[in-house]
Image 1 (cartoon, rainbow, N blue to C red):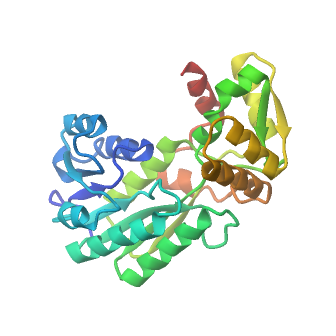
Image 2: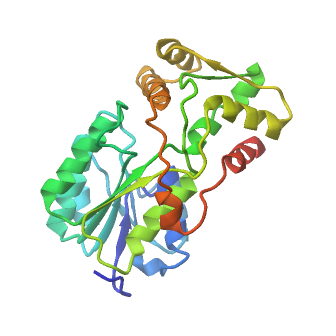
Length: 294
């Protein structure tokens, strides 16, 4: 399967943080007429911004199969960005896969989780289920097993600086995260590849690895403010996250992910991401500096 001027590329979840970046990356090399953005609400501000880029916007709600059947008409390659609704992902992803197969989509790229088949993270369960669905579908697919986004750890920088402590539960576990833009570039490259891909698996992670104590030191260096890392038991970290206003289930997933990081679940030294995108992954310090600038 080669990319022609008639190949139509579909990005689901296009108003999300990753989806927007994938659309922007695609438009560097592909005419807007070939790119279709799938959104839950075509009347939203995010959808209007995408339309302003010249791409076609279609309603594609994972939870509403009727919208998917229409959205995927004429599509050859589809990026299935995993749903943000943890606990509902397996059902929603099955809806997408079934609709894509029925519409004759010839390639599905799916944003899975780093080493999903063996990962101890609770998040891995629905990713494993989705990978199995893709295998059963018979549709050629590519698994983009994304590691952790550096932005996940950059998000709590402001409150951490306010309290002079960065909380976590990862011990000295090494984390090979990458910027969201790096993963978006990988998805864009897979969608536009000129060669047949069949079924492929990419284990994607950042070139650099750090512990959360290292991360706290980088924040201190970039901000000029002293910041210590405090390692907490998983249950205590979850309690702290809930106290900061996070929903119970989300706090539990973040605490579980940190505990998994201590066991190596967020580390990979294979450098497949930088090899795929043809450049080094974005440095951790760059993401921290961007977060400090707001």
